[in-house]
Each structure stands twice: as structure tokens, then as C-alpha cells.
Length: 398
Image (cartoon, rainbow, N blue to C red; front, side, top):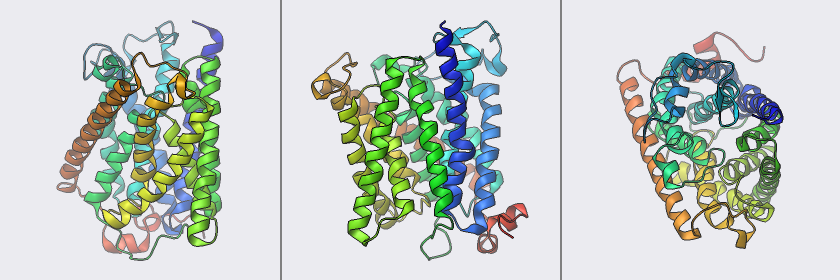
């Protein structure tokens, strides 16, 4: 165990928690109507707290006990058999537990963007808790916990599959079953400055998200941070350029959203590609995610309010597939795959299909049960009044 590695992962843990609280909360909060700002903030805050306890009770044990192909066991439930002297992956296990907890926090929190302004708060909490245990933790085990996809050789450095595709598919299912908002007006973000501030916090936190996933303070962590920044910067500029050409003016929300698309897309590839690969990923992330936003809303007719599937789901999928060719030394990558480009691509495709199917089915079952018991949507009058007042008896602005 190297003390410098421990110090870096402790720092990364704080950075990744900073992504959710307050980064994601402010990013999403700035994008909704002012009458729903409190509801978005409390959803992100409460989900963070609830996921922390759920991860402690059973999520960590399911994900990181190496006993099965598909699920861990409960031998580390409530952190049983974990002491101050325990080690995991070359780190104190308490540090590894906390670092992974921050990933378990932000993944369900990202889904919030799909159902803002119309979901029941209680349904959000129950869904998030169950989803963490039956979708997130098992998929984490498959890929990072020594499960069947890990043994197959899948590459997912920091969560293109575990985090982004997983939450993106769940968000699409949630938005579909919830139905569109009652208002036919296009959502106009009430505070682009808040959204930009939240994006900036996410960007900073992503250095811990991707750089910390090296689990060491070394050159791999440094390269992961480098390619993360290049992809984010590139995607932000390309998204802005597309918007400028199409609509005549660039927007703050547009450049911020492009940045998030670049960050999400580089995530799985950040430990495998070089700077030139990151530039390619940033360009493709902006173009593909931009047009997927319209595809989901206009073609699929699904009201994924803040475009979680188009940005995170598609971004995570895109980065997962692109890392196979761009990770090759011949294309400027680090050459860490033990198989050829085509074979690695086949593994990435199979893993992506498996994650999407499992996340989609599990999310659908949980939501159907909730829909037919406590309900998942507020009433029309509550939605019209705004969730700040109708669900929480508070107001962001007086």
C-alpha cells in the first residue's frame, strides 16, 4: 500500500462527491423552471444521502465480493469483515469503499434529469434505492468486481457502462412510463448561470472521477485527466458551433451541455486513449449527442426532460465503443487491450447490450410496480403549481 495513492484517492473521493453535491444539483436546477428548483435540489441531496446508506448496507457487498459471475454476496453487508487495516485494490478498503460510494451516489442522481418537474418524491426515493441494489450494484460486479464481463475482457475505465449507459437507459424508461409534461411549451431554463456553475463543478470533479479510477497517483491518472480535459473542451466548442450555425447564436446552456457530453463520452476511454483520441471523441460526442437530443424528443416522443439518455446514455455507449480502435497504439492509444481491435470491439458491443438490457428490464419492473401501487407522477394541479410548493412547501425565490 502506497501512501501517495491513498492520498490521491481520498482527494478523488471528495471531488466525485462534489460532482453531485452541489455540481449536478446546480446544473439540473438551473435548467428547470424556477418553481421546480427546490424539488431538483432536494432530489439530488436526498438521493445522495439514501444511496450512501444503501451502499453501506448491501450495495458495496453485492458489487465487490468476488464470489460469483453475476452477483457478489452479503459477506461485507454493513461493512462486516472490513476494518481499518483491511486492504482492497492496493488501498485501505475504507478508502476504496468511499470512492466507489461516490459513483453509486451520482449514478441514480443523474437519472433525476429525466423526470424533473413531474415525479413523486417518494417514488424517486424508493426507485433509487431498489435500482441501486438490483441494477447498479450487479452491473458494477460484472465489470469492476471480477464478474463475467470482467473475465471476458471488457474495458470500462471509469463508468461508460457502469454509470452512463446504465443510468441513461433507466432514465429513458422512467421518462417513457412517466409520460410527457403537461405543458406543451418548450422548457426555458430559468437560470443558465446556475447551469454553467454546476457544469464547472462537474468538470472539476470529473478529474477525480476519471483520474481517480486509476486507483494510483501515477502517469495513468495524469493521462486520464489530460484526455478528460481535451474531450470536454472539444465537445463544448463543437456543440457551440453546431448551435451557432443552426440557430444563429451560441448559448451558455449549449456550450455547457456540450462539455457534459464530452465528459461522459471520454469516461470509459480515459484510461486507454491518448490526447489525439480524446480530440476525436470530443468531436463525435458533440455531434452525435446533439442530434440524439432531437431524436429522443421528436422521433421517439419521449420527454426525457434534461436529455439524460441522449447525453449520458449515448455518450457512455459511444465512448465504450470508440475506445476499442482509439485505444490501439497504432491510433495513438495506450495499447492496453490484450486482443485485437475487432475482438475488443465485439466484447464492448456485447457488454453494452447486456448492460442496456439488464438496466432497462430492471428499471421497467421497478417502475411498473411503483406506478400501480403508490404512483410515480404528481397530479396535474401539483405539476402546474410547481413541485417546490406542492411537494415541499418551499420556494427558491421570494
